[in-house]
Image 1 (cartoon, helix red, strand yellow):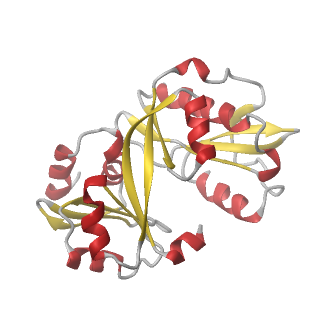
Image 2: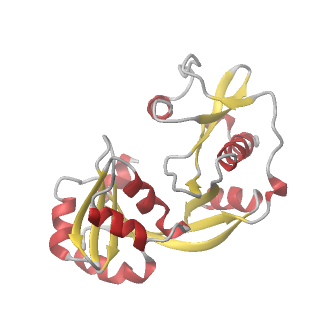
Image 3: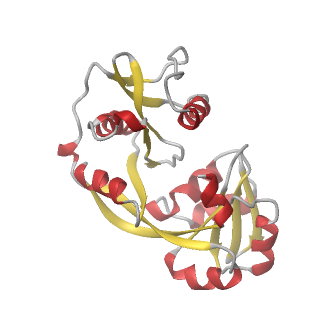
Length: 239
């Protein structure tokens, strides 16, 4: 059962795209909530978690405390707070992320024989080391929809964050299999599966990521909001 500050914040933050990550984190067992009314800092305490969310008026002491042991943090805030947060974190770089909601489902790919859930016994040895490590980790935490080529998993789609009615779309494709429409097919399968539980997809893409934004538009997603992500040069290199 959530503690009272968490429960109160859940009542305050509506289940809409801009609060998807924050709300999903509050509903999880990994939320670290600091501060008080009108000035909260929310951290993901899961192993490897980088997410830090500013909710309400940014407070310098809270920010410094939350980031003290997080040199690779990804701090998220609303666009209207960007200038205030930037003034408190001069060593961080900011970038706008566009949030998309699915407006037209007709562009989704039809189910196919080479699209299915990634199974524990599916080998990932053929993937590049960084993608292999990421997918090995992700599939221990939930379902991953994969597109297969010649029996090997080539493209992946999964939901890292889920609320009562929304989920985020995460995708990755092995470099040699890109531009073949595989991500579209894997994402379409993910959307069908999540919709069976009453959840709708939210797509997030940095303004500079033209490929991700184009794929979102091609699948029928339309922009509905924005967030700002702050990262240090060190965290950007780690990506």
